[in-house]
Length: 502
Image 1: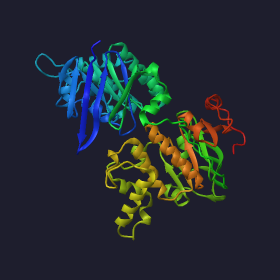
Image 2: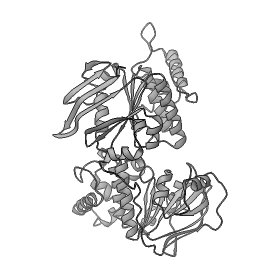
Image 3: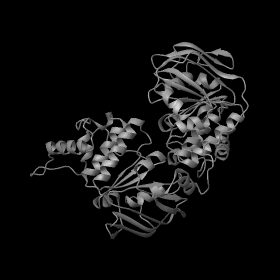
């Protein structure tokens, strides 16, 4: 079978730094070919070579057996190659139909746009993706991330794409939307569309992929049929070493109670929550999407202050009416959405790292620039942030390194209580291991960590105790030995409140 796209000995450098070295890759009709590697492995550069964004320095690229050299993304699209990037490239003020056929709209005989035909074809495309619920006249800016993604896929199909590149398509989706997207991918495969699927999520890879290719440090490591590999073998290929234990749980001595909640509520989202968190402890909070996990974090941090109940820090009753009050009490919050809530991505590492403690680095009139530089350089070394230096814009970093910058920002405030909401979402396995190791070091220093995660293996692997929340109420508590996947999973669907949660 002739491959839709083949790459032979592709190399690419930027500013003298080689980011791809003699990479070989191909994808066949009706195949989902997963592309894996740690952040910085060269995945993004490779897919941009295929998509016509970058031209390779050496090597050949063939489409349908014919050698080509793309000069632009438009040139690649004319050869049937479409890309759905993690940052969706749609116009929010245009309708769904207008976005789907932008630059490719049907026309009347006299040359004007055929609006009726465009709406009808958009409807047919969406229906073919089981997206009957999407209104072709809705403005894209009003849609959820998942629905915008389906618009992007329909747009690719409108251009008769033979190859669809999907870059971290589920990184920002909730579980129900992930299942729906995976169903769409399977339908496309059945139609004979070739798909390059870039993801850090192993369950998706094993459910969808026919073959998998691994890159490491810009070097082609190998291609395997999915039936020939395990999660452990793929991790070994990606990081170049065997990871005996993905979750390096570190035993730390437990201290006094650092944080206690007594019947804390905020509207219907947080209802009569009572819990305690000790110094040196990782307390895992598990629950389904919409269960109240994040809402509880927002209440503890003062973003949505508690309407009833008591919060005690180090045994003393406190009032947390805003993030500054929380910070001054030694509480830090690493939010679920690092891009919009944890960082200012157009700003530098230096500026982001100092953001939580700016009032401590000014003389009342100006920020001490030298202090900012010193703190950011120390943070880069301490957390192993891969960067050109403190003046690099945060938006240019990989997801894992952006997460480290969020952590660095809050660690500057010397917190004794750290709330981590989805601490490893959207980052690769190597970066996850580094975050887990950092958590281990923090609890050994006496920091109390409340970890909220939708990844059950992460909760079970890292927590000393596990609480389960459902409908804004705590419904179960397990110590580490009791916290099995079956037990915690069953509790996540049980709406009976926990009696005497502590």
